[in-house]
Structure formats: C-alpha cells, structure tokens
Length: 132
Image (cartoon, rainbow, N blue to C red; front, side, top):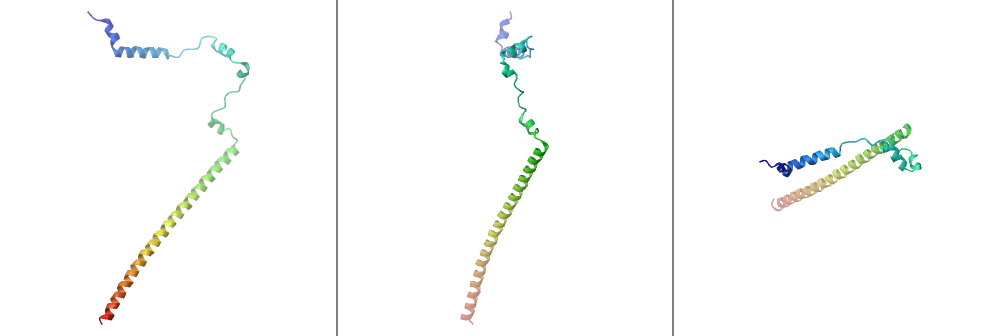
C-alpha cells in the first residue's frame, strides 16, 4: 500500500507548490473594464490638469540653449587646464625644494670631508716639522 500523503511531507514538493503559486500570483493581468475611468473620477479636477512631471535631470541639461552649453563646457575646460597648470607648478616647486635640500646635504658632507682632509694634511705637516 502506497501512502499518498507522503508527497505532501516532501519539502521539494512544498517548494514546487510555492513556486507555482508565486508564478500565478505574479502573472500580469489586464485592468478590468472601466478601471481607468473610475480611477480618474477619484482624482480631484485641479490635480488632473497638472502638467506632466519634469523630465529627468539629464534631459533638462540638454534643454539649455547651445550657447549656454558651450559656455559651460568652455568654463569647465578652463578650470581643468588651470588646475592642471597649478598642479604642475606645485610639483615643480616641490621637486625644486627637494633638489635644494639634496644640494645642501651634499655641501654639508663635502664641507665635513674637506675639513677632515684639512685636519689630516695639517697633522701630516706638523709631524714633518717635528721630525725633519
């Protein structure tokens, strides 16, 4: 004897049944006859006469006249070029300061080395004077 209720205890069957119910519930359906007219009757007349919603922001940007768009693009390009120029000047100044610091360090090292050489030469001369 086969137990027919065993299929209802199966979780896979419950999932399949749930999926089928969801598919049916989400099927597109056409509105019943007269739905639009009934809906429009519920909206106050002053709100029915409203103009359409504003277009998306991207569409409004292109609604500006060509000279205004051209001026905006030109201004943007000027700002970009000026910013790039200022950044390059800043980078050059930073590199110049770094090079200046490196030269100063090199001069300090050279000075210390020359001072040490001068001391060595002086000590050699003193020894020669003491031991002719």
